[in-house]
Length: 294
Image (cartoon, rainbow, N blue to C red; front, top):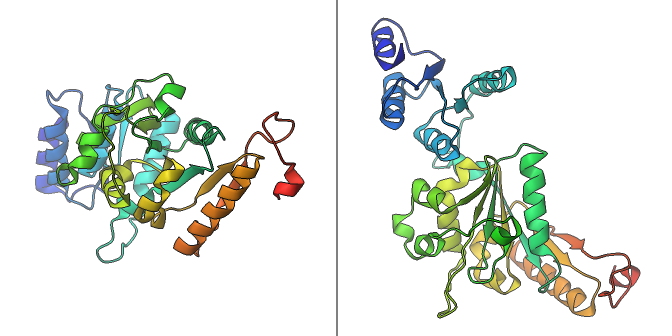
């Protein structure tokens, strides 16, 4: 019956705890969704249904306050999971805390030098988390000029990342979502291929400002962080759930892995970085053996 039936129902009954609302009959789904949420109030968990398989539409519904968005035709598994999620009691949040901000785990991945495979690890780890473990994953490439995450996935880089970082006061979820490159409905990339004409400096405050409007959309946000950015990204590292350091079996990599670990220890004594040695085994590029490295 749509919105009109919902409005009539609410004249005589209390708002339902869980509401399924089919939006296919609505000419413009976003105003309809906004009206439905306004009619039911904050205590109702609303699950919208429609035929549009659009991840940006899903994000907009979630930002409005919906519990979920399901694409028709429904599967039994998706319907059951939506009901289970909507039935969970809302957690009581600390005063002033942002539950969307706390939901997403930020994991920087730092290579000790170029060529150790940190970008390859970031891309493959993102794919595994999203496709095999069913996580909603974002991958942020902080190398604005030479980043290769989009290239590794055969995608065109986004166009709005620099503008977003330069204008933090104008940031909103829709602007940033439009700058992201979607690899699948569970894996999106935020990256750029910026001009080489001028150097662009940004700090961790700007990076967190970039992520804040969209963190509620993701379970994990992996950050491909060039090593020369770590001193400017202190604010971001302070928000990190974990940090991965990627090295190979060379003397330079050994030296810089120790330096990066010590830097992170001074910055975050509570955080134990995970050191990953790539190209282990019989790599022709190794100059020291694994035992010596350890």
